[in-house]
Amino acid sequence: MRAASIERYGPPEHVVVSDTPTPELRRGEVLVRVEAAAVTAADARLRAGRFPKGFALLARLGVGIRGPRARVLGSTLSGRVERVAPDVTRFLPGDEVAGMTGLRMGAHAEYVAVSASALVRKPVEVKNVDAAGVLFGGTTALWFLRDRAGVKAGMRVLVNGASGAVGTSAVQLAKHLGATVTAVTSSRNRDLVVRLGADRVVDYAETPVATLDDRFDVVFDAVGNVSRAEGLRLLVPTGSLILAVADLLDTVRARGRVLAGPAPQRGEDFAFLLDLVASGHLDPVTEVVGGLESVREAHRRIDTGRKVGNLVILPHKGDDAARTLNS
Ligand SMILES: NC(=O)c1ccc[n+]([C@@H]2O[C@H](COP(=O)([O-])OP(=O)(O)OC[C@H]3O[C@@H](n4cnc5c(N)ncnc54)[C@H](OP(=O)(O)O)[C@@H]3O)[C@@H](O)[C@H]2O)c1
Image (tube, rainbow, N blue to C red; front, side, top):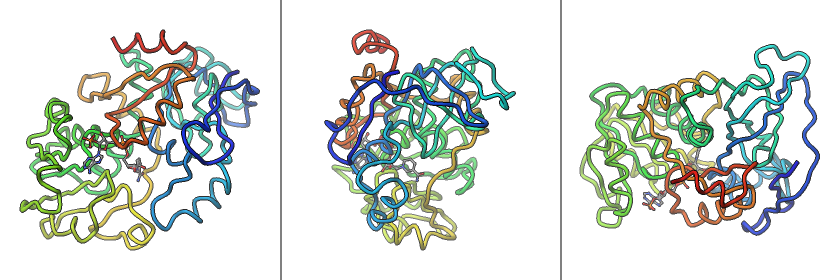
């Protein structure tokens, strides 16, 4: 099969598409023909070996010293079951599925071996592109907003970085939970975040977040440029500060009102998000970048810090054929 892989941490040019053996199935695993896979901020971090402050050594010990141990990146996918391990009873060849592969990665390829517990059935109404696109930011936003901060109707939520993968889901999920949402973004993404439901938009070039006089029940920083002190100052006394990009110090001392750390990848959350997409309550904001050869281009766009929503590749299609799906 063909896959986009990387040997050493470095720039997007280090990603190479080549032939590689189709993964062998271990117990409990399913081989999925990848119809669509997201290229995410996590992929770009792993490719570059760029980790939040204080995490560099720990992260490299965990995921690889000179380059990622998982050579084929990509953790979020949608596709069709090709084969199942003998002990797997939940899925059959031909089933349409979506899910996340965790640190094993491997989705930037024509086929990937995934634990059956990390997959759910994809509703027929949801396109592969949208299923692959929504899960990375969606699971993060859902975990922090609903499960950690307990967002409820009437709460005031500020989302910093509202136009990215996490931010676009956070704006919509906060609205879905009944909150009033203030979205922080640049002027070029104003219309997008309004369309997603933001009640108010703050252009960070005109009004830096830290200078806002308002107070919120939840401040969700999906950029990493709001300090703990600045975030706490923006909260009502009972409010919660979500630091999705916390450094080591803020991660260690995150407790009580300050929430940080990795969001879990849970099947029930995948199903919840896909149902919201199917019913038209969650717009995945996806863009097809191309086929496998476009993984590099997607990394370049993420590295600019200006990516909007979710970038998706279609491993079984050529670049031009894949891009026509945007129209
Ligand atoms: N804790 C976890 O479990 C977890 C899970 C997923 C992701 N993350 C982390 O969360 C971060 C965000 O991920 P992502 O996938 O959403 O990233 P992303 O899609 O690459 O975010 C790009 C967006 O950030 C916006 N942005 C850049 N600078 C900004 C600023 N100063 N103020 C407001 N918005 C700004 C850009 O909008 P403009 O062009 O308008 O500036 C762009 O649309 C990443 O660092 C990722 O590693 C953490």
